[in-house]
Image 1 (spheres, rainbow, N blue to C red):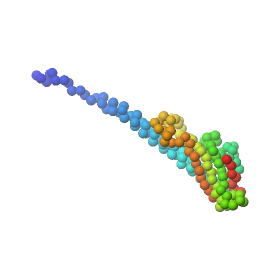
Image 2: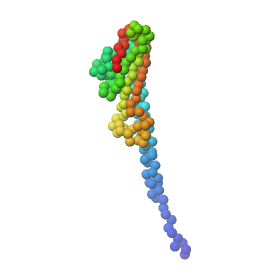
Image 3: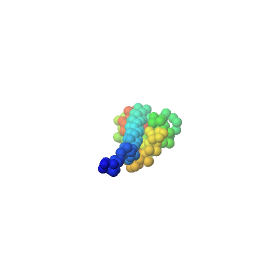
Image 4: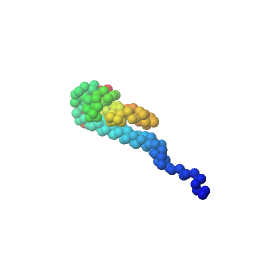
Length: 163
């Protein structure tokens, strides 16, 4: 007789949906942050590889300018072309020699290439603006990566300082 007056037990049918709704934003931030960070690291590694390749070109053949013209002898164009970017995206391109003596760049002297690329240059489509909306995203990654590579000059007259 008493069983009739006992309150009906409540079900937990919607509890998993509520828990999922609470966890989903955190999960999305972690997944998107991992993807964006991975793409930025990809950009950094690719830019470092390009800097080493450009430094090697300087060591054996040289470049005549750093102006950004569409010429295979132009350092800015070479870097931008290798990274798949426009010449305007690659900034602060500098090539300098560290001479061991006063005779100019001789074999054995040090040549240094430096340039900057945007950290989101490897991100296309939907991921291009994700860095700005992630909490703390702009604090974790800098807006640009500054890349430097050194090489040893192998040919006389192979290096023209610029930038």
